[in-house]
Length: 422
Image 1: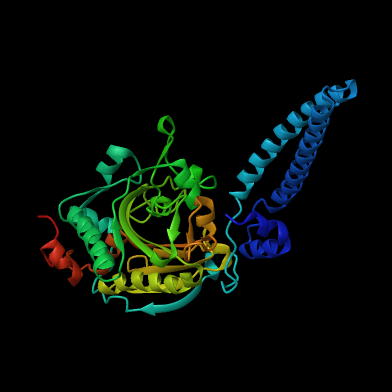
Image 2: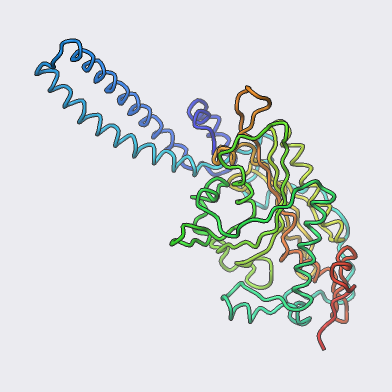
């Protein structure tokens, strides 16, 4: 979240920053509540001071006068009213504060939506496919490695089952991504719970804004993990980190669940937008002055994976109107899908600066005795398994219906191709 003092002392700066996002959030209501909150707090303090003054006078005199008794009763009644109103106002204030999005970095390009994102670079070439490219959902079914009908039978629409080399490909990608992150890119692998508390959802910025897009177990007050970013953020909630140990870099594989409540009618076929998906996450906690170097480093790490797989992609810098709620700056990587003849998102890397750290109270000291500061947090997909499978199937397809696998995956798979079932 944004610092309340920043909103209070620089409201026009925040208003201009949010207008660049084309999302003002509840800023005006928040400012109004803040005035009421401070007035009530001041009145509460004044009432308490007067009560203390009368108490001291009574102690000196040995007994209260009639006027003092009457005034003390009036003070007590008014103090109860003020503190009740103050508690309600602070609750509303804190709820609205959690709904204000992060402000864009000043260098983020201006734009209203995804159509105005800025292409930064491309890598590789679209494959020369000597047949009419087929979409990955057709290829997966014809190869006998993806079963959408049985997925729907088990769990409903937008679920699927992997079989044989399809399941092995999923496992191979998870292992390859984690191996690369740990052995070559300097991350520490983490194994995380798949269920998480509301505090973790709030700390990462998923609550309250994205409650409708998440799966909730009311009886246990637990949420199905919407992305490993959430538990990775919460690893150090309410902690004070040693600044000498920063940055902390983590990677984790975690199945994730989303309702896709805002995606009705979009990508209803295939592996692009499903309710249960699989992803390897990159995450970093850094000192503020280091976060933008780390940001570029993480984008490079995601690119290294796509290059190792030989997949044609482009890098976009998101415009102000397309930034995620918690992000101050984001790059998306989009992979080429031959059947659709278009690039589709396969990784998103974001710098959240201190937005999540404030929500989760994650701070550090540069040295013993120095003041506490909030860390900066960064997250990125490295990479999503389902969308990577889709890209491998479409880019590796051959005229006979087989799929040539990327060389880096062949040792994990024990084969160079996936051939159609007899």
